[in-house]
Structure formats: C-alpha cells, structure tokens
Length: 200
Image 1 (cartoon, rainbow, N blue to C red):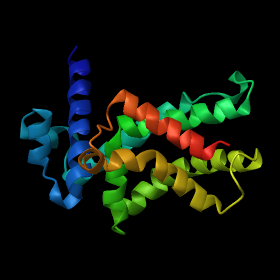
Image 2 (cartoon, helix red, strand yellow; image 1 turned 135 degrees about the horizontal axis):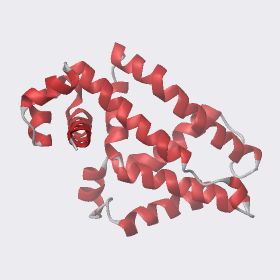
Image 3 (tube, one colour; image 1 turned 180 degrees about the vertical axis):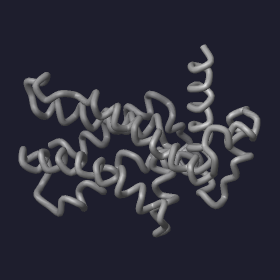
C-alpha cells in the first residue's frame, strides 16, 4: 500500500512539474510552485528528486516514456485492408496524443529555444528516437504516393507541427477563434482536417 502511495505521489509531482516547466520554462519554475500545484509539502520534492534539475529530467523522462508507450499501441498496418485507412488512423492517433498532452510540445518549445545542456540531453536521449519514428512514417507516406516527394525533415516538421500547434497555442486558438481545443468535436475536426490535407 505504501509503495503504491509513494508511486502515486511521485507521478502527481511529475504531472505538476510538466505543467509548470512547460508553462514557465526551467528558469521561471520553482520547486515550491510545483509542490503547490501537486498539493504536496515542499520537502517531498527534495525527498523524491533531490534537485530541480533532477526533477526536470525525471519529468521529461516520464513525458517521453508516456509517448513511447502510446506509440507501442499505434495502429498496425496489417489490420487494415486499405493502406490509406491505416495512414488516417495513424494521423488521428497523433492528433489525439497532442490534444491530450499539450504540455509535451510546450516544454519542447521552451527548451528548444535555448541551446542548453538540458536541451542537448533531451534531444540525444529522446527526440532523436521519436524523430526517427516520425521520419519512417512520413517516408512510408512518400513511398506510397500519399504525399509528394520532398525534404524528409521538412515534411516531418510540417506534419508534427500541424498536429500539435493547435494545442500548443490553445489559449490563442480559444481567444481568436472562440473554440475550445480540448472539446472532443473540435479535436476530431482538427484530425479530419489534417487527414484531408495529407492523404489524397
């Protein structure tokens, strides 16, 4: 029971840390603010993570492990008679991931604007691997003739950006367009739009 409670407390702190780091950046985030958001005593932060840097790395690890777990449950091409249906399912899953976890892209933007040791660690440990996965899928789209041949890195960033920016900038979307990006119907409409744009 205690082990389970300890794990739950740790996960709660990590979720709070992701929100704070993705909103305020590393420098603008305090461990006290994370503790307040998690609803725990500040001393628990040090107990579980020792330092703000260690907490940041643990939060980033938690973030990417969650993403990789979802990738493992991606649609399988062998389950689809029509390859276009498989491509549509993959794009829809990606959109739903970014909609559910807007803090992921926000944190990456916060760190990618600065060439820090933390940023290089995040890229080398996680982003290279996830980018390779995205690149393989986009290359498959090219090979199948679903998208025109073009620079692979450019197409990866175009598609990832199209899938995630709507949620990264959710407050702007809500203020400018008067729609809630967390609404299921809005998320589905966004996925449909991306699919129609990409799969011809």
